[in-house]
Every structure is written in C-alpha cells, then in structure tokens.
Image (cartoon, rainbow, N blue to C red; front, side, top):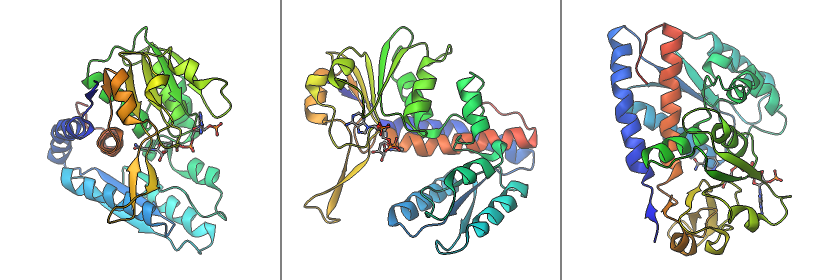
Amino acid sequence: MATDIDGNAVASDVRDGLQDAIDTLADAGHRPGLATVLMSDDPASETYVSMKQRDCEEVGIEGVHVEIDPEAPAEELFDAIDDLNARDDVHGYLVQMPVPDHVDKRRVIRSVAPEKDVDGFHPENVGRLVAGDARFKPCTPHGVQKLLEAYDVETEGADAVVVGRSEIVGKPMANLLVQKAPGGNATTTVCHSRTDDLAAKTREADIVVAAAGVPEMITGDMLSEGSVVVDVGINRVDADTEKGYELIGDVDYDSATEQASLITPVPGGVGPMTRAMLLWNTVKAASEQTGVDVDL
Ligand code: NDP
C-alpha cells in the first residue's frame, strides 16, 4: 500500500516559509500585492479567484480583484491589464482562464508584463523556463516539484512519465523534470492523447505525473511496483452528494495505491500546492520589483 503524499501539510510549510520573506518586505515598507482578473461568470472560475484572494489575506499579501463583464468589449480587459502593469502596489497578477471567445487568449497572455506574470505563462517566462533560467515556474508543476522534494523522491536518473502536454501543466512539468538542476535530471517522457500504448510507457516509469483531465484513467495495472504517482487531475463527476458531484483525479486511487510507494490523493494532493506556489511567485515578484532581498 502506498503512503499518501500530504499536499495540505507541504503547502502549509510553504506558506509558513513565506512568512519571513513577507515580514522582511514589510520591514522595508512593502506589502506584496496580487491581483486576480475575472472576465467570466463561470462558477468554477469565480470559486478559483475567491480562493486565491482568501489565500492572500491569510499570509499578508494584499489582494486586489478586478472584474470585467464577460459581455464587455475585449479592449476593456486589455485596458485593465495596462493598468495593472503600471501599478506599483500590484507585484503579480493573473487573468483567470478561460476568457470569453471574443477575447484573444494568446494576446492576453502576451500582454501581462513578464515581471508580474506569476502564472508563468508569458512567452518570455516560458522561454526562460525552457532555457533553464526560470523567473516564475508555473504553479502546478512547481508545486509537484516541491511535493517530490518534501518526500525525498530522487528525480535524478529516474524514469518519469508525464501524461498530458498542456501549456499550464504537462509541458512545464516535463521541462522541470528534464532540467539539469535539482528536482530535475529525470529521463522524461511526455504522453498525450495520440500516444500509442500509454500503459507500456507508464509501466516503465519510476514517477508518473497524471495531468490528462480524464477521470481515473491511470489504473494500478499501468504502474510499476514502488512507483511514485502524482495525480494532478481534478475532474468533476456526477455523484450522489449534497452538491450533486464529486472531484476525482486522473488516477484510480484504489488500484494505484496497491502498486505505488507514494501517491497524491485528490483532493489534498497537488491542489493546495498550486495555490501555495502562486503566493510564492508573488513574494518573489515583490522582492524583485522592490529590490528587497528575501530568502525563498
Ligand atoms: P488540458 O485539457 O489542457 O490537457 C490535457 C492533456 O492530456 C492534453 O495534452 C491531452 O492530449 C492529454 N490527454 C487527454 N486524454 C488523454 C488520454 N486518454 N491519454 C493520454 N493523454 C490524454 O488539461 P490541463 O493540463 O489544463 O489539466 C489536466 C488536469 O489537471 C485537469 O483535470 C485539470 O482540472 C487538472 N488541473 C489541476 C490543477 C491542480 O492544481 N491540481 C491545476 C491545473 C489543472 P492532447 O494534447 O493530445 O489533446
């Protein structure tokens, strides 16, 4: 039986570790500021931004929230972006995706000032990550890296399989695992929907990171004994619960736990880490913009 990787505990440690840095910034007269921009009435997006705002409040980061009517012209969003790029009190911000169809998503990503792009999605920041000179590591893969570190999982020389190649999870995850740097040096395979015989790939892996968005697609028989399994997936499926749904991962926990040595549960695994690493990136942004050195 695998041991659960406790994402809530590691995230709490990350947040505690940020406190000194936030205090150092405060002593120098600066409070880190994080803004969220929402141009959507999707309840899930609303929940995500309100959680991010609550996280800010808890650690002493100034939260700013900007809401744009989803029916408004795209230029309203771009004006808000220009405004946030210019504000001294906002060190980092993100535009909650998805944006409405009439807004060019790629232009949004390109318009965020790279030094405030705490999601790490701007092409300059993607390029820096790939070049081994990351400014902001995207929050989810960075969180996975921290979880592996916290549980002493040796990535160097390990065979890692990442299932999924999205810009926000799969690709940056693979980039971090393959980097010639601590938390990297893994021999990394990236799988996707066109991969032939996925199970043959995952069965060879010491570390499997599942980020496909397909409920319980990774089953125990697809894993090698003793492997480390990180389940990034958050899938809302109909269920006989008060809310009418439940959240499940991309890994079939019950069968996977029979094979794996370590496994992240859903919820309580990667999710809390994503949120913690957004705060981490915000503090890093504040330190760089104010010139106040902090220990991160
Ligand atoms: P995307 O839909 O953008 O990407 C999914 C990727 O998985 C694609 O590359 C796709 O391949 C691949 N894929 C889909 N089906 C299969 C399959 N049957 N076999 C192999 N590969 C497959 O999703 P995201 O990366 O944004 O998110 C992935 C999951 O992680 C979702 O459940 C999401 O909710 C969750 N998530 C969780 C976070 C957290 O904090 N825990 C943060 C972000 C996301 P192709 O490219 O060929 O289409």
